Image 1 (cartoon, rainbow, N blue to C red):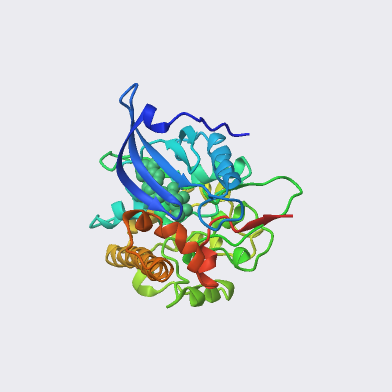
Image 2: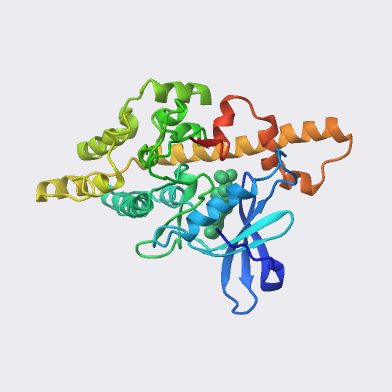
Length: 352
Ligand code: ATP
């Protein structure tokens, strides 16, 4: 069982700026007092009482910690230490300074497919390693693929956020409703028994994107997608073949991470394949547009959650919203979600 230290984290680490936030807390830069080394601290709020809908169940934090403890790979965020107080658990993890991979790419004017493949290969290596340990991530999306540092000749990829990860046990079925609509696999929407194949339903550009989350989910189940010419006109046929082999509804037919690593688009077999790949580029104009839209959707979700909370608090308390309320807006959001958005919820899962 995962061991959580009971020391006060602030005795050992100086708490710094906020680096990001998720549904159940914040991630902040922290400095180890003894050595001066910088880390990231992921502060997760715990449920205040059994059955409470605020915060996380301790069991689910234990699961995240146990999974992180068992993963040591260059492309997976490393866990150093875990602290627990009455109200929260703090995970001390490797500090990742390079931001999101998609933001890094969106700043570029040109990107050759071969450069994109170098990044993709690293993601696949991390995923292949996890899957070899029977661990599924279940929330692979652009926000969870980061760069260790930005300004390096070939930046290292780090996969983060194992909050929805699951370790498969032979003979035990696992179903989950968690995930983000644009990136969710059909077997998740259909609440079928899952496997690590759900992580392989990857398409950065989410060709299923509908006007609403409901429409997106319908498109996925109906396998309704097209390679829109304005996104894919400069894309090589090998790249399209690669994407199609991942967007396969039957999870048993879908490429595994291991298969991907030997697909000719990732590992060309002939000089012609290599040359074709090197001639193709990513359509940056549309990539930038896609990334801006993705970011806008993320902030829209955050703002509307805060607005809902604000109204809720006004009704409940008749008092003003203080800073703590705003900090809690993401975890409180759980209580006000609608049916479709409940697919976004973390850890709505079952084993049978
Ligand atoms: P979610 O609500 O998506 O499940 P979460 O509460 O599990 O999120 P994370 O996704 O792990 O939290 O982290 C939230 C944000 O904090 C990330 O999007 C990222 O910007 C930042 N972050 C996470 N881990 C690190 C890290 N190790 N170094 C630097 N920043 C990080």
